[in-house]
Every structure is written in C-alpha cells, then in structure tokens.
Length: 294
Image 1: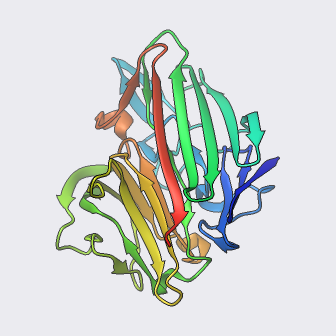
Image 2: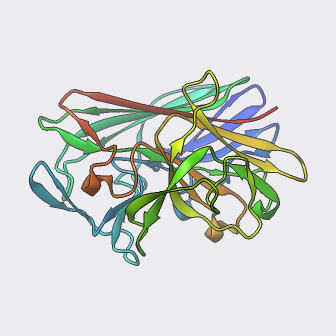
C-alpha cells in the first residue's frame, strides 16, 4: 500500500513498507531516485532507519552491562544494517492532501529488548518542498539505545552523476575497516573527501560517513546539494543531524547519490559516540527537508 500527497508543483509517494519515500517530484522532475511503491526497493531506497542507522559490527553490542546479539543482515561485512523497520509495514495514522503520518512499534525482539513507538510525518509545502519528521518515544520501562536516519537518493531527474556536482559542508570523514566500521576520524580538508566547495562526481566513488558539518549562515541547519551541470537543476537536502553517510549508488547505475543524515555514526551502539539513550517516556525528534533550489 502507498499514499500520494501533493502541494503546488511538488508531489510525493510514501509506502507503508519501511515508511519509505518512493518518489518526490517538482514540476515533474525527480528529486529522489523513484522506485515502484508496490515493490521492495534496491539499496534501502527511501527507507526510515530505526532504531539505529548504518552498521553494528558483528550484530553485537553491549548496553548498560548487558550484551545483545542482533541478526546479521549484511553477511558479506558481518554487520546488522539499518535497523529493524525497513521492511515492516507501518500503520497509517492520518492522510491529508499534502501530508501523511505513519507509525510503528519496535521491540522487544531478540537483540533489542526495548520498546519504542515511532511516527513519521511527510509533509509537502508549495514553497518548502518535502519536510520529514521522525518522532520516537521510549514506551518501555528501561533506558533504550537509539539512533535514526533516512536513506533517500538525491537525483537531478535521473541524470548520470558523472555530470553532477555534489557539495557537502563536512570537515571530517570516518576512517573505516573493511566492514565500513569506523576506527577513527580524519580531516577531510584538502583531501579527496573535501566536498565543501562542490566536486564533480565523474570518477568519484563514495560510501563514507562524514561529520563536522558546517551550518548555513544564520541557520541551525546544514545543506547538501546535487547540481546537474548540463541543466543546472539543483536538489537540496537540509538537516541538522551531526552525521551524514554518502553513497554514490553504483547498484542503481550512478543516477543519484544516497544522502543519509544520521543522529550517530556507524557502530554507535558499540562506540557510544553520539548515541541517543532514551529514558522511559522520553521523546526524540529528527527532521529534514528536500527541495529543488530556484
């Protein structure tokens, strides 16, 4: 099942499965890589990532002195990838012409003996584009480790990214092992990971976590943009989370870039870095916006 919403020249399709964003268009042009809303997408396209984004090494972590074992869902790298709710059907809470709200319950399940309630609201504005708000409450009786993110692929109407410029205001990039688990940080400034002034993606391959994200002037958010050098179409993602995973979408034919804002880095359930610990009845809210720049 899926839901269509629109406002002004913007239209979007949202799926029950994974509370996913299956499409977002402006004046008929794709701003994210679309997929069939009746089929599970390749590469977690459009999915909401809870209760953790990215990877947990070995599917194992220790929280408050107790070790937990999650299913390994990425066997090649021996990790638990992108949480527990990407492939479940979320419940419809409400739908209006320009917005839709979905909700799900997480846990207790093997490896995650905690209880969360999460709602996701997708809302279109004729002048603002798409706003996404993820709100989670700990409805259990114990503190719960938590993180979230999203997994949309920005695209300039399907243009090959070889002719696109990607601008990311990040000053640091994670050093990783062969399983893409962070083992440290290094400065991105002056390296091949320095995307602050915009870099043509011809020959560039990324699957990396960035931080040190510089906020826009007089703003509480940072912006990433992808621009087609041929048509000058520019797609912007705006957020305030401290981490960002970038992936150049080789399985999708390099027609977009996965821009994944995250509340924490990969493997935060083990490192504790920027890990959210939700106390009973405590809430956490994360939001982002995607729009076409004029």
